[in-house]
Image 1 (cartoon, rainbow, N blue to C red):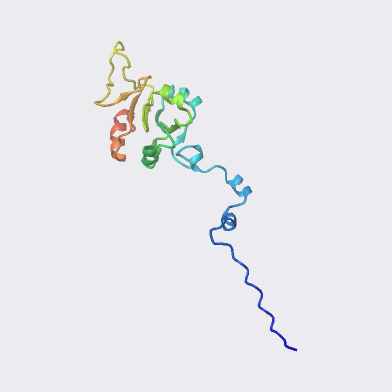
Image 2 (tube, rainbow, N blue to C red; image 1 turned 30 degrees about the vertical axis):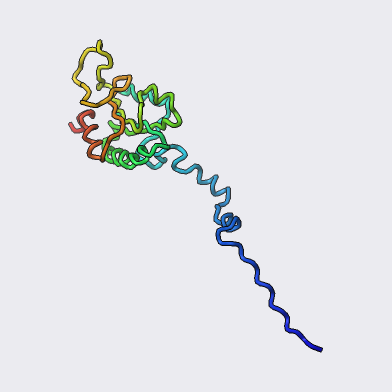
Length: 188
C-alpha cells in the first residue's frame, strides 16, 4: 500500500482588511454610543464644556432685559464654514471674559435650528455678534432721540437697538477692539 501524507488543512481565507466584516469590528457597541450621547456638533458649534453658553429662543427676551448683565451673543449656523472658523476665536473671547462672569456672559444661538428667531434678532449673515446691554442702545429710527451711543462706520444695529457686527473679525484682537468700547467699566 501506498500511504499518502495527509494534506495540510487549507488556509482559512482572511477577510479583506477593509471589508464589511472588518468595519463592523471597529464599531462600538450600541450601548456605548447611547451612553456617550450625541457628539459635540449635535448641539451646534459649542459643546457642554465650552465657555460659550448655548442659548435657546425662550431665553433671549429674559437675557436682553437683565439690567446688571451684559450679554455677548453670536448668531451662527452650525454648517457655516466662517462660523466654524470663528468658533475657536469666540471661545477664546469667552474664556478671557470669564473673570467677569458676574457681569458679562457669552453665548451663541444656532440659527440653522432657530432661523425665525434669528431673523427677528436681525441676523442677516453668519457669524453675527450682538452686544445686549440694558443701558446701551443705539437710536433705531430717525425719530428716536439721539443718545451717547452712535454706531461706528460700517456697524449694524439690530432691530432692538443693540450693536451688531456680521463677520469680518480677523483675529481675537479685532474682536476685542470692536467689543470693549461697548462693555461697561469692568473695574471700579
